[in-house]
Amino acid sequence: MTTEPRTVADSALTLTLFAQPEHSNSLGTVHGGVVLKLCDECAGIIAARHSRRPCVTVTVDSVTFHRPVPLGHLIFAHGRITYVGTTSMEVAVRVEVENLLTGKVTHTNDAYFVYVALDENRRPTPVPPLALTSDEERRAFEEGRARQAARLARARAVP
Ligand SMILES: CC(C)(COP(=O)(O)OP(=O)(O)OC[C@H]1O[C@@H](n2cnc3c(N)ncnc32)[C@H](O)[C@@H]1OP(=O)(O)O)[C@@H](O)C(=O)NCCC(=O)NCCS
Image (tube, rainbow, N blue to C red; front, side, top):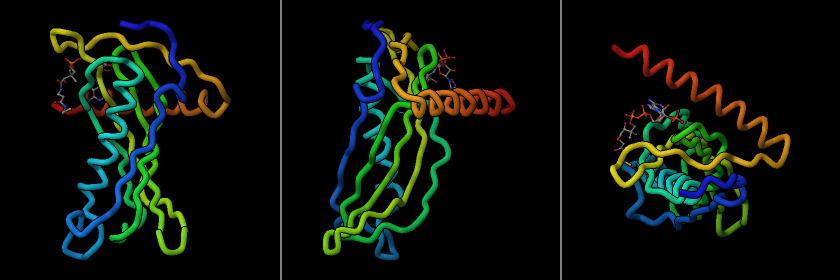
C-alpha cells in the first residue's frame, strides 16, 4: 500500500456521457439514476486512484438535482477528492451539461460520495493522506470533515 500523500489533482477526473434516448425517463429528460451512476463511477474511480485499492461506496449524500438534463446534451461529471479519514474518502462531483447546438454549459447536479478502501480480506484499510495545495482545498477538507462527522452522528442515531 502506498502511504505517500497524494494531491487532489493526482486523482481528479471528468467522465462524459452523451445523453441518448436509452437514458430517458417518461418525461423525455435524462433519468436521475443515469446521472447518479455516472457520478458514482466518476467518484469511485477517483477513490481507487487515490488509494490504489478496491473501494466500496459506504454512503451518498447531498445529491441535488438543480434542473432536468435534456436528451442530446453532453453530460460531464467533474469529480475531486475533498476529504480523507483513515480508511474513508469523500469525493465531490459537480455535474454540468453542454448544449451541443449552442455550446451553453449549465450546472445541473451536485453530489457527495464516501468510499472505503479494502484490503485483500475485504476489510477497511488505511488510505494515503491528502496533500492540500491551496486555501480552497484546505477549506473543502474542513467542510468534508464536518460532513463526515455529521454522517457518523446520523448513523449512530439509527437504532
Ligand atoms: C464499507 C464497509 C466495508 C465498512 O465496514 P465497517 O465495519 O463499518 O468499517 P469501519 O467501522 O472500520 O468503518 C470504515 C470507515 O467507514 C466509515 N463509515 C462507516 N460507516 C459510515 C457511514 N454510515 N457514513 C460515512 N462513513 C462511514 C468509518 O468512519 C470509517 O472511516 P475512517 O476509517 O476514515 O474513520 C461495510 O459497511 C460494507 O462492506 N458496506 C457495503 C459496501 C457496498 O457494498 N457498497 C455498495 C457497492 S460498492
